Length: 88
Image 1 (cartoon, helix red, strand yellow):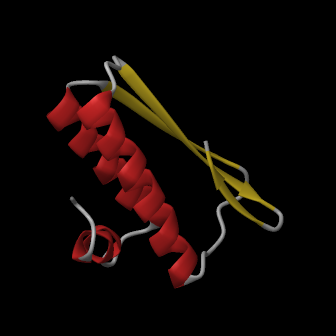
Image 2 (cartoon, one colour; image 1 turned 135 degrees about the vertical axis):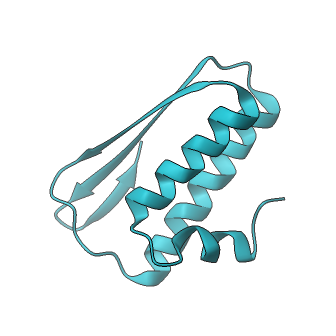
Image 3 (tube, helix red, strand yellow; image 1 turned 90 degrees about the vertical axis):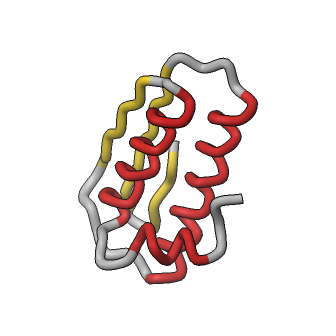
């Protein structure tokens, strides 16, 4: 799989948004799908463990798309809420 140190490398000095954009670029290259990414709400700093888990969840989801889905497009959203963050 692409996990382990991969998540730490994805975040190395990058914002969550930058790391997720790189993951989408990987998905485009590997699976040949068109991707889009939007952020909703007011971006706020995330605790390191939250950022790590968020990137891990997205990596797993995109890996599943690349390996198992017959998708043409992938849309990813990051929603900043008053008490947290959500991935859609």
